[in-house]
Image (cartoon, rainbow, N blue to C red; front, side, top):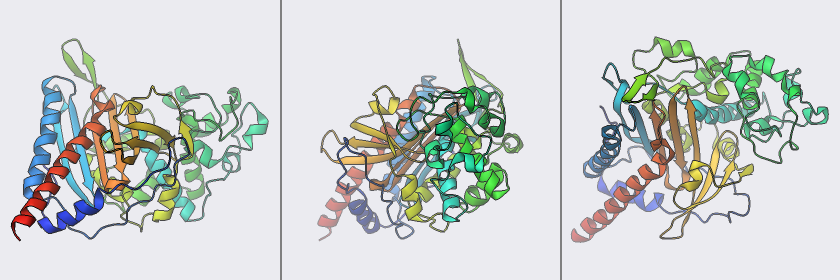
Length: 424
């Protein structure tokens, strides 16, 4: 297993720590959250020194090795980003339990609905280029799109489908996506579904209508989604093992196979083609290293790929997500959730200090893979975990890893202050 961690001087880390752990005052959770302001890129070469990188490695290894020992997972890959650097990238367990081959930071996983964040960003790139607009009507790009309530057909916009506010019942026609129908065909069948609310007024999670955002991108560019995302995101960010097709995954010799739990352990499964017909909803493949580069970009680096102002629009909370039954609503300090354009935005309050914080997040599951990604803009921090088996661990791996990082950073800060005072 390899880890991508480098070294810097204590004074540089101290400056980074003092700057990065100050939380800005956040709005009342009873009101719609304000736009997420991305941190400005910091100078390069700000990294953890040896002592603290070792602590981070040890803590992450202990966390995942315990899960492996208890047979909770088959394999996992982890990436952690701080400011503009990947401070940890590594793998645990097996790609295929029968072969005992190991997962590393370059092992490729399917990431399921974490792909939706790529769709939001990719749409924003084309908004910047003037090819589309957030408020474009779906029917203007896909003429055969129609709802059972004709008056609402002309109201559904690109922003609505990306924020799950098209007015349709929960998971409308997800079955057709999983059956492999083309998005053009599915678009023409929405007249079989009766809308339940006006567009823009209520959150109901979708796959089929969400994926129409990718269909629109294909039509305005004249390219397939796998080509567009490769050219606009993967190549510029040097996500060298990322892809958006079944065929690309089949060509790789470092792929984590999906697994199913059986009575005495786990059994490897085959990779299916579900959601490669709807890339925007769940068709991206990536490694921990790829996801580290993706999170660096999401933290405000690489403005040549997307301007920070456009990324603010993608992360802008559009609709509140109610209830208390979702797994992320049970994370410590949870206050409220919203959905933006392909991303969840959560509000949290520190149980000890009372400080408020925001997390940009998404989870994913497809073909017995599970994935989680979270960006902490106030802390210049990103965490991504990829699994090749269904498991309960995925539901709270983000807050647990975040706690590990916080404890190490807090101890690092205190020790540097003591060392500095002793040197005077």
